[in-house]
Amino acid sequence: MNLKNKLIALTITALSVSPLPILAHASSNSQEGLLDLTSSEVQAELAKEEKETEAKKEQKSKAKKRNEIDSLKELKKNAPEKYKEIQDEQSKQKALASSGKMGTVGDILITYDNETSGWNHGHAAIVRKSNDYIVEAWPKEGVRVYKNNWGSRFDSAYKFYVKGADDSDFTNAQKYAYSQLGKPYQLNVQKHFTDAYYCSQLVWKAWYEQGFDVDADGGFLVTPADIDDSKLTVEY
Image (cartoon, rainbow, N blue to C red):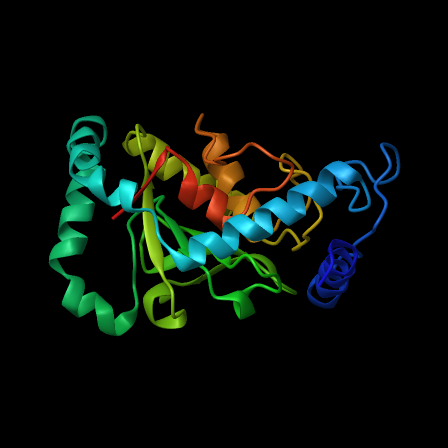
């Protein structure tokens, strides 16, 4: 499929899942905060992001796994409560497997299952203080609280903490996401737009507000793969 057709498909998909109209042209006046899907810059990034997501689906980052032990030592120093929560969670893996519960407070959850979110980049969410629940931006429903059954809900399921964050950062990140509850789902919004969200933008914004930019490439869009590729996120 050529790029033009991909853009048309993306817009049609967004129209089918979003309660707000997705507009192909975003002017600086009446549509402030929306991306212009017809601009060459956005088109180029859409093409790049699609390649990056496909590559990430094929192979998860080995480098992150090699750095996991050192990162956990740093986490123990910066966020001792978070470190203890992770240790407790890992000791309960068998029990948690049946429920699908993943992660601890403020963690980022990612899947690359395409059918989940109305676009071909997968889905992302953030874990609530009680890790029985997550906060996610979901098509047709917008920002919502949902049961944390990530591991059984999706075929591909990954969890990440943010490197260098302390306990208050993890708590405040999920609080920020929760404060956006009820806002609509929309795909073609700029990253700092807060009147509507798509999944990975909500997660990115929640952590950006704590001083951590978890978008690996800093583009117009932030995808689950961008968050996965960030030097600030650690898969465990």
